[in-house]
Image 1 (cartoon, rainbow, N blue to C red):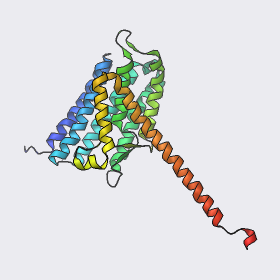
Image 2 (cartoon, rainbow, N blue to C red; image 1 turned 90 degrees about the vertical axis):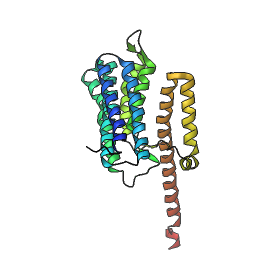
Image 3 (tube, rainbow, N blue to C red; image 1 turned 180 degrees about the vertical axis):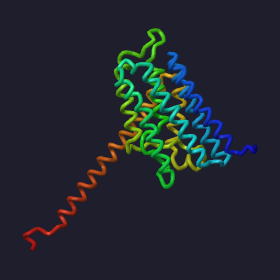
Image 4 (cartoon, one colour; image 1 turned 30 degrees about the horizontal axis):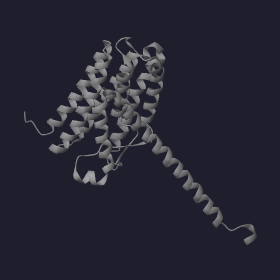
Length: 256
């Protein structure tokens, strides 16, 4: 059997899926912190498979499909099950429905993304990327879960259902989010602020530890919403101004 270059990125994709599966196992055993960190490890492999595909010039349709399937496991099913096991199971059937939104809407978001690969806006993702959703849930658990009590912080428990709903809706929304910058001179010259933000984020995490991860993801999610609201207001104002100009250009009855 001949081993091609495409095996290299696919190996990282499989490791991504494997981490997601292990996260589910750990969550089922009540090991919530390791389960959350495994989602982060899955994200590292997810980033590496894309990097390896570019380095080996082995991008393919197969790679796109297996990457999406892995993402559904690691950033859809794993955080959904983690949310259910750690807190939402107390809500019964309602908790099942809420937690499942992370997986179901994440799958819908990936399906939409795959159909838009030709001719879509490469500078932005339309909708919150599923890895960002999964990592937001994982960082929330890491921040607010207590090994002493074996539970989330009481306030965090009340917030978790709402967070799951908001993240799910953002994934299938029209809100735009920036793609991760490619490491190249051309990319740095084109969008230097992305690299500045990325470097600052790494420095903050390194200095403060895991406590800074959740605020950073919260900022990323919020920036997309703020920008969407701003662009919507700008569009409405432009539309209103255009209508006023059209009305002013129309002849009045006294002019006829």
